[in-house]
Structure formats: C-alpha cells, structure tokens
Amino acid sequence: MARYTGSVCRICRRENLKLFLKGDRCHSDKCAFDRRSYVPGEHGQRRRGKTSDYGIQLREKQKVKRMYGLSEKQFHLSFQDADRQKGITGTNLLVILERRLDSVVYRLGFTNSRTQGRHFVRHNHFMVNGKRVNIPSYRVKVGDQISVGEKSKKVQAINGALEAVVRRGIPQWLDLDKNEMLGTIKSFPVRDDLTMPMQEQLIVELYSK
Image: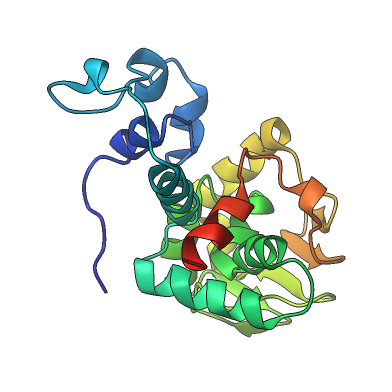
C-alpha cells in the first residue's frame, strides 16, 4: 500500500487546519502549523484564492482522509460501507473511522497520534477482549475491552501517552481504567462526540457526483 513518508506538518498546512498528526509536538511551540499557517511551497503565502465547489469538497475529503491516515482506497471502501448502512451517510462514515482500532487506542490515550496507534497495533501491543489484534482497521464493537499487552505495559511511549491524556480527555463513548491500562467501548460515538471541524456532507456530495 502506498504510504506518505513526507513531513506531516505540511499536511496540516495544506489543509489549513491543525490535524494533530504528531501528538504532543502539536501542542508545543514547535508546531510548524502555528509558525507557518499557510500553504507549503515556494508561493504558499500567495496561493489562498477562490476555490470551486468541487475543490472545497475535495479538500474536505482529503482533510478527513489524512486525519485518519488512510489511503484513497481504504477511505473509499469506508464510504461505501457507510452508504450501505441505515441513517445519515456522512455520520456513518465518521463513526466507522472512529471505530478503527488504531483510532480507538489513540482516543483512549494509549498513543499520542493515530499514526503511532497504527504502528503499535501492527506490532502486537494491544489486545481486544483478551486476544491480540494487529489489524489497525479492526472495528471495535460495543462492550469490547481494549487492553495493553502485559509486556507492552512497560513501553515508555505508551506510559508517556497515558500521562498526557489528561490534556486531550477521553470521549464519553469510551471508558478508561488508567491503572489497569484497560479501555471499554461503552457505546458508538454520536456526531456531537466528534469535535474536530469536519463537514462530512461535502464528502457525500463529492462521492455522489
């Protein structure tokens, strides 16, 4: 699968929004977006102009796709799943993305970013209902328990992320036992639980063309 290997700070600048792709660094004065909040490139400071409706829809899709660290194919498949479900397609899409295991371990505070969450999931650091799961796209269900493996409880990066989770907070649809390094899925997220500025209807309009 194609994987972006460039500077993730450029992604935030391109989308004109801090996406918190680098964990704690995004909260510090080292954040590149805070220092240069314009489009990257030689003429970045002069590139803010009128954008077509299609361009606005495309940027919204790119923003959400990059926020969750998915490839174009993965994102499109997630949209197709959302479109097949009952309810509002845009909301269904965001719920599907939030239910990914790499996103859940980030939301629980076990990692500092979704990218780190995906990396740690692949390296067998987490368990779902007592069984190791190394598939980042695994979709959690209500009642699932996400725990840190016994040996992984000593990993400095995981402990450091848990110490910093107070700043981010835990969403209402999740429950965290910090001492046991155990998270529980209390319910699926609702739209109000997702506080990042996302206009999912623009994505639906883009794929409906």
